Image (tube, rainbow, N blue to C red; front, side):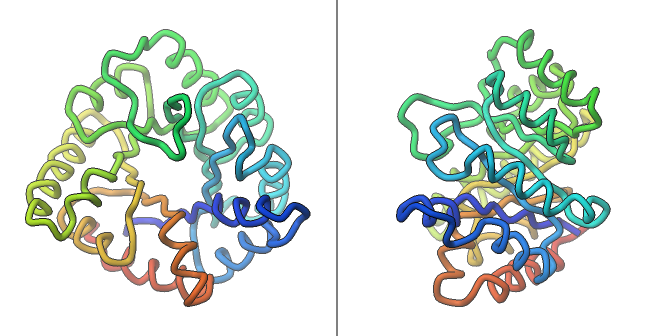
Length: 247
């Protein structure tokens, strides 16, 4: 069964728009976990536009006694301060993503020609502390092979191209491309995660057509639906989809 990791960045975006501590990030995490979410994701950017360093620590403390049942996944670019915080918190998983100047959200995965020396060193440091490392990549054989070459445990397939194609007549072609990418990753000994613009409409067809997806990370669409439906109810709706995913 594919696991759901709820990205709570947008809760922090709402809080930061007003200042103060409302809505509470920790309370949001608590609601998601109580609804059955087996994972929580945050992406603390350098400018702290949503998740702050203090949020990372607070969530880690809140989940400390749930490590056997709830996975904490911290996403970010491998700048020194980020890596140091991840090593201090020791989540179960760290997803390393590239950052482009001025981007609002992630726009691409790691390129296959990225220098592997620095990133490989970061991967090994994280793994030495017992942290699983996933690399955010395009659904391309070259990028997946590159991730394997730097020692990653998993790849997270960047799914915005699939989401853009959904409902346009190109959906089946994209699903086939992601299925081939997932199979290639598995052949190289990599686990497979997926995320970006997955939602209640396109998630089911994606998981039905792409074998071996260990985890999906979903934030913007989930929190947007939760405004109208409620957070717990929305988490439950996503869990119903992931439970139907083929093994």
